[in-house]
View (cartoon, rainbow, N blue to C red):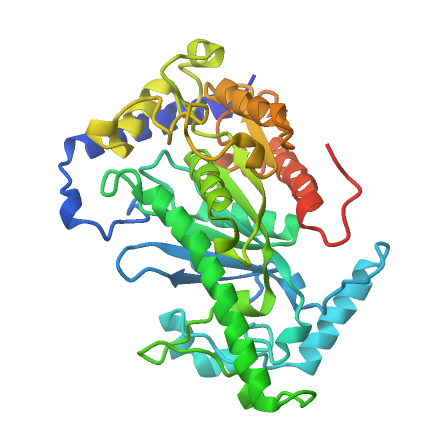
Length: 443
């Protein structure tokens, strides 16, 4: 059973959540006048970005859609500064990697040009240029940069709360980025009830297409530079920094992704309701096929999905009053998220096993599902995983005993042994599909 502290915090958490949900229901929202939307709530603590490698990770925020509040936070691991290692030996030591990183820093102390993604970096540009520990994301030798897989992360919060820049989500993404050695793009999708379904789902898909656009723009930018130099010529600083700009003179190419991202190894990771978004994006990626080139979704991770249905499962009956997110409160969240005329617990956004939901399951990417013993939504997530395995999709289930919904992502549970074990287990599985050398661990 969960500890006394977890039980007490659950009571407090449910009281606050119920109060907030009821306030949202009672507050009239004119959706037609609020398409811009919101991606965070005033009562939530947020974490500021830091372009230096604090704790081995650099972060930046990007507002990618001028017509809505949709934004992303990029988490870039310090390991991306190391030279590429396509032929490195599996037994190489950490000291070798550290020496390589130091060599690169010493060779290129002023890597690239400062980005203009935030007011702070533009106002303090001179300070950033003098600090060797600040990475500006645009490498002078992009063809020799280490390319890392890209992971799209969708936060939880029951559709109406949570954000990609919350303190808890920031900590979670930092740890996953280091364990998996990936660039994380955390999606700040629009929240309900200001923007009901399908806004959050469309935002998730829009970010995937944005990744594809970024990859193609980076390739165009690279071609422009190499064409100007001629075959075999050396890159100069001016030509290396050549990139595409929009009508206002701002860079269209995101430099961190252009220098270090490998979109052909893209993983989706969704937390709670974010898992529903991830599964939707995976389905749309299957339908799009080569239209998304060079982006390829190679796997997805669904952490305690927010699935539900009209016909209750055994866990939905026996654990309806479970910890943190009980069934009555989740029903309130669904009422806030789904348009009134579309409300159904068998809505395609809610039930992954309804007929005619999308492409055949056999075309879905490998899917890891994480469930908790004391989560009333667990059985439907397990059933979805079983349906995938029946059509020969690699779809293991990791079940954690004495665990509750969001046991690895809630602020007070982030440092528990279960949370740490879950992150490590996710990294082991994900590396099967993103490692260029393969991985010795498997499930």
